[in-house]
Image (cartoon, rainbow, N blue to C red):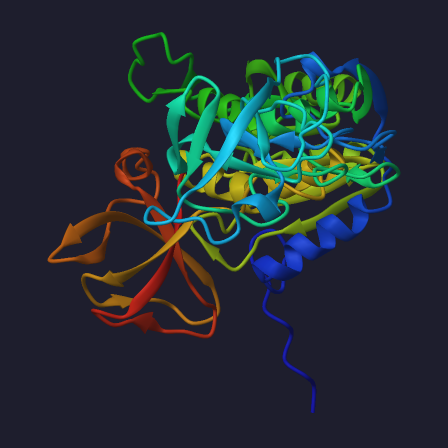
Length: 422
């Protein structure tokens, strides 16, 4: 008895790859690549990824400081003070900002001090202005006492000498640059920004600035992809619209690969007579194609390849599918090649109730775009319905949720985790 031949699709694929597996295949390859580094001024460090450990060479603060406007005191003098039984302290000094205090706080006395002022000798607490009543220019009432350490930041309470302030792979935020400045650091080593080339294929595509004629459509993907790449912290280069003809498409793709760390082409990864996506990726050199086709809607025909150490992505021509595949595959690749370990924040999510029943085909990951509506104190997720290539569905959506491969749908009023579009 002969076995039945295995069913293949038009491109010779026997099965589609689950999304998590496809992403793992890609990222496992990219883990072998060491990102390049460069040294920059901290003023240029916003949204760059740190490539070195930053250790503090000093204690911050180097001397105890006040965190309130008020009076530097010996805490023991204020114990038990209240509005009905205040204690009285003589004002014997003033802490000038930017200068070390002159003199020492004696028992029964206090110094005026502003927020950030260095704590004078003899004082171990600060009583804020709101808890004092002036008697005259030389004396105050304390109507609420404090213990040692009240309203002060001690030596090294911010960061101690020798402590690691920032780790490699950290995406630098404004507050991180402030910390570097506080430590007196002027230059830092960061990972070089990833360069991403974009090639749009298809004889039916015209620039978005033109009026499309019969059978033509405007180029949507390039404009949207430039924005997504920039937001991901990479540098985009648009190589324009390229004919599907092999002798035109291949040289442009090869040039883009030479000049960039990642190359995206859209429109050439779906089944079609003139589909040159697979041949193009294979022609760029080993290891070649890693994945072609995933269990995803929208985005099934995505192509993921590798030429040497450079990822090459064939994104679907439909704009919605292309942008979904960018989020799921290209953005993680950019992050990996950028050396990023920690981001500024996780992707924002919100739990909402689904407004209607939704069916889903088992065996694929469905990404459902939704609008969020506040209704009677509840957050409602309303699916944004439309054809797979309708870009307006993305523009009208606040976010999306996922229907797992093993699910056949989600019922009305079920809680769903919505990933918010930034």
